[in-house]
Length: 226
Image (cartoon, rainbow, N blue to C red; front, top):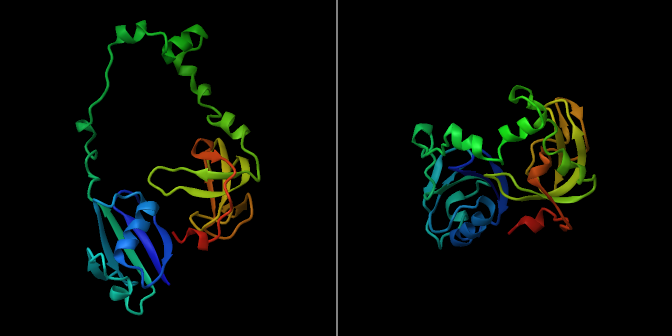
């Protein structure tokens, strides 16, 4: 087996996946579609060894990983989705904005301004509207629930709810999840303060709006070998 650190050109997140050394590049790409979300049509792969030296740029589909890795069992796969222009919105002045006149906005009934006026609350004192954001969703989540976690730019993760409540590191309600696979960032503790128990890299804290509760079967590491 080969341990591969997977990077993409559209997310700063990295993850580690194990692949058979005799896996052909064609089948590897099919696995990377599920892991990274990159499209097969626009996928470009670069293989680097454990020292960061490039082994192959755009490997042939009917070759195998072992053809490039040799005895090196720790590699990096750089997955580039050519359909994504990562610099397209660096200059926000080029982003088209939706604008509405003040009079047109005043005539609408479904606005924050209208809501505040009806409740005799000034806009300067509206901060309480955001307080506890997501608490309603969090109230429906219980410790022991099985869940899926959806975070933009990351693969969907499955795990178990281990904690719900406020934390010391950021305000609001947070959900502590133990993933079935080491795709997390911690062991259930932050800054030496423990919220729940799990192995390192299996734990994460997410907002309730990023969680779907369901009867998801518990998966072993082997089950993730797509």
